[in-house]
Length: 77
Image (cartoon, rainbow, N blue to C red; front, side):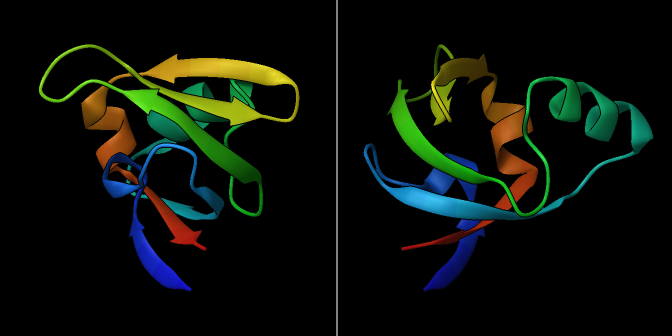
């Protein structure tokens, strides 16, 4: 398993969130979307340079910006 940012994951790849590199505001926002350390996620899709990164969390699909995705550190399969 390797430690990378969510942004660098491949589409369809599964991972576990390790940490969030940001202040309390970012942590709270991501937590409200179900993204927090220990959570299992799957990268659903992304668009190079533009558009959101979409991830599957349980049965939900969540879209976040590339800047946020860079700050989410995961342990990828």
